[in-house]
Image (cartoon, rainbow, N blue to C red; front, side):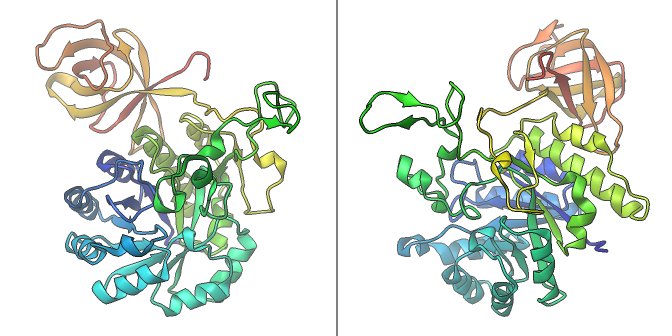
Length: 413
């Protein structure tokens, strides 16, 4: 059994990084302003990466930076300086996919830990052994592998070489992220960080002799989503993931919200700890899966882990997300006389009952909003409709800094 499993979280910006670590991540991965695959994310300046690294290291956590784009010649301009800047702020590893990038990294920052991105499409142990010889410490395996295949890779590489695998989040219909649909439909290169996600768009069939007449490819008058995969979810398969030799369980979602990251990381943290604390008598807690459904998500699939996905792994009726709860506010500070400083994220009211998600307990808290005051003026309020407004609030239960407050949606949508 692997007792050194890492829970790896996405960090699209500094707030998401901090929330991921507070809610249980062992490490985070992020992109700088260049050379990554999420150009639409806010991403990090060198100064922000430095702040994030310091925040993580103070708590015994690690930070990995993606430089996994598929580069053209001009993309190497300024690359060496960028690597030196990242090394100077003490990031823990680079995630890369291109041999040329690897070559530069080994020349410029020879002491940096190197992780091989899923973009390198590593699907076999021969490939893993090759990268191992090039100095790669960790292989992020392709999404298209079964647990059996991952175990075979682990059995044929050095014991100290780590295996990382995606266990939760959006699935790409291309081969481990190497997609050209975005290039074709929008002119934006997915392999250089500009993906516009056309695989989530609505499509119809048009017959050559009947221009202007649109037919649904599937029997649904709203159209079809034949590129549209369900979301990967392996929270109920922790023992199997560890038995396969996976060192790092990776959550997808650098474009997702801080609330999404915190909720998903907390759920997986509880599941992992529950198993490691008592592997012999472990039984999956369905409440952990219920927690995942409290954030925006599609229906779930096991991906390729047990068998090649069939048509049940795709959404044919909608590209919409499901969401049962709204993120209402974040506790920014504990104040005197049992008041707390809340930052509003969705409108809430005096007198209503909210659910509190703690980072240091499996138990949720239900609390009533007793009083609300504007933090600057002290004006008493009946509700808080303004986004990110700071308010002084008295609740009927004690909560801590960085606790998240949320509300169940009445219609469950």
